[in-house]
Image 1: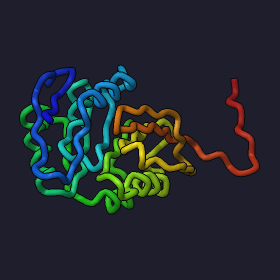
Image 2: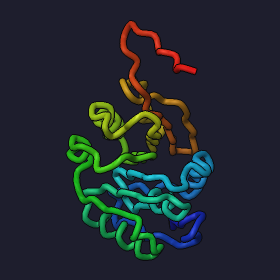
Image 3: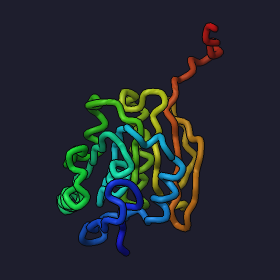
Length: 198
């Protein structure tokens, strides 16, 4: 099934798919719903697209006015596909591709602050949960206010609890679930949150 850029400077451009079945590109209707939820917050935002596959989500963000997208993907064919799609959409000047393992990357200090982190790993391997745990264990990646979005099959969803991430919304579109988390300051045990001075 073809995938396209839905809106913005590259609207209507058809994106290449990664050969084989190692990736699962997000359906256009799901991507459209995602960016409808995000709205104008996409403008001048910085994105981290983990398990980036075709690069479709990060590219959509760039097309709609994001300042930068960092694509992380270890598969050689997927990396080439992202490069080709950035060339097709003429958005490569605001993109960085990192060919590396996601979990190795998340053990390191982040190169910068990200407003949105999108996680769409291969299905049925609990990689989404491991990725959230990796972010939560290295909270420099998720300063308060960072939005983390997980794309999974609804059957993969499990209860989760983290020190720095809190689920606040979820939307189901057929066999795709978008699960939204926000990074927050951890509340010390036994202490009530302090009121801000007026």
